[in-house]
Length: 225
View (spheres, rainbow, N blue to C red):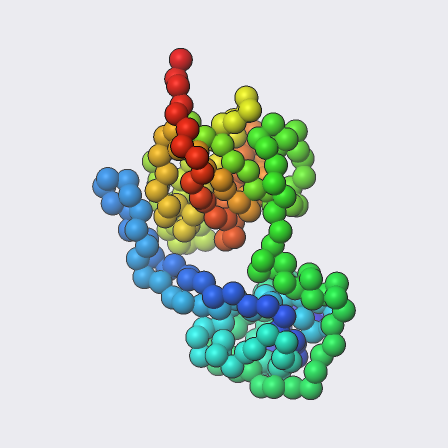
């Protein structure tokens, strides 16, 4: 797939994941966030035998795709992110002859939609400068800022900030989009996965990704001196 735009792509489906794409959001005066309009989609990891890509498919297209099978996809193109195949309502999938993949390509394709995340404690994160890997960590919520709507590429999306503390270290967590749907509280102890390390003019912060999961762990009481 040397060309950025292609009308026909021949690939093998390696993995798939059903998820929800949120189109609009409702931020109530109380500060609570609610998802508005949404669309069920399936993300499919595919490979042409040389590169790996992920495709976002609607229900009609996804119903014709099975993991392990090879297909010719019509009306698709490589997106701005070269690991993304863009589809539309005209995209169709037709079974084709088998495309053989190396184990390395299969692993790389699967990790596009099920990425690994390294577990790190907060002091380790402070000393890290690896911006490529995803991070999972845990701690106690010490401060929460109100969720607000910000405009990104012409669309309003929710953004929230809270701070996590453990083992004498504290980090800023920036929640984007659906990562703001779980309700969190001051003093709550949580585990949070698949975070991206970022450095800016204000210092270090961790941002959520589409794979981020937030779960409550044991209850912890925070004492403020």
